[in-house]
Structures are given as structure tokens and as C-alpha cells.
Image 1: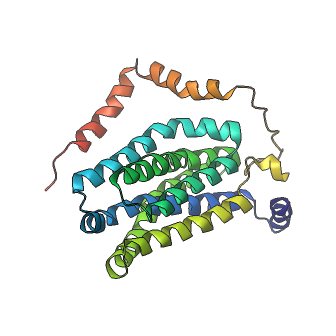
Image 2: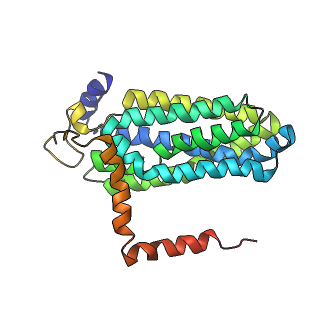
Length: 259
């Protein structure tokens, strides 16, 4: 396999393959952050072309954020059951398909389905839990650094892509901007398919910072049991005072009026 040979070649040079996985994951999250941010440049062009109101367009994007938040806790269950690479590539296909088909949309319900459901599910599967999963599986040493890089990918992706997408939408058209996003997602798909692996043992390496190879534990739970685990954890956490104290600042900030 390409990854096994590359891992062996890098190991001879003193480079752990985990950094390739971390870099690929960072680029994937960068691309998905750009895809999520592209919604912001669509509102005015869609209003002008189709006559939809800001409230109607924003409602589709709100549904996307709903699915993004709801699927985050379950993304880890999918990764544990199906594998990291399969989940990431499937998510990229969903996001790319949703954005690609939106180039042809003419009805408001199509916007709701594509940007609310399809893209919402895809981005939810590549939420921040992806970076945490990669950091936990591949790194014992430098794990905090990797988590920090993954966390920064969301803001970095929007910082890089939003000005470019806004320029494309203004000078060429919103379809050109979305076409560019689809091409970026396609490149991320290729990188994920080539270089992402589930565990260090898959390429014959120990976790970065350890000397012994950790065997991959078999997945004994059924998918339905893995999916119910986050709900059970949430139920137990909701009984503690700390849980509600953590929610209070975010809730007040979310509803704070801005100038």
C-alpha cells in the first residue's frame, strides 16, 4: 500500500507518519470550513437571482448549523465503527454533492434540502471531533499541539477562503465561487483517500511518542450501541451543576445584542 511504503520511508528519515495524517486532516477541515463559510457570500446573489428573502435563505443555513451541531457527538461513533478514512471521504462526498447540485437549484425547497440536510450532515461528520480523534489515536507526545492546530483550522479556513469566495461571487458569479469550493473539496477527498489511516498500527508504527505498537482493539459494540453512548453521556452530564454552568456563558453570548 502507498501509505505503508510512505510510512516506512518517512520513518527512516525520522518523520512519523502521524504528521502526514495530521496535516491531511488539517487540510480536510480547512476545506470543509471554507465550504461552510461560503454560505455567507450566497445571501445577496440568491436574493437578486431568485427573489428569496434573507429570512428564507438564512433558514436553510440555520438547518445546516442544526445538523452540524447535532451530528458532532455521533461523528466519533461513526469513526469508531466504520473507520476514519471512510467517514471523512463520505462526508466530503456529501458536502461536495450538496454544493455541486446547488449550482442547478431553482426552488427554495432545494436550497433547504441541499444546504440544510445534505451539507449539514456532511459538515457534522467532520466537526471538531475529527481533529480530536486523530490527535488521540496517533499522538501521545505533542497531542496538545495537534489539537490546537485542528481547532484553528475552522477559523483559518474561513479567513483564507471567505475573501476569495466573496471576490469570485462579486466579479464572476456565485456559481463560480461554489465551483471553486467543489474543486477544493475534491482535492481534499483525494488527499484523504490516499493518506488517511485509522490507526498507527495499520502502517506498522507505534503511536507518536511511544515505542511499542498498540494493537487495534476490535469493535465489539454494534452501531446502535455506539450511537446511544453520547445520549447516555449527555443524560448523566445533565444531572451535574458543572454542565449547566458551562452552558450559561455560551447562551448569554449567543443572545447578546450587537451594534
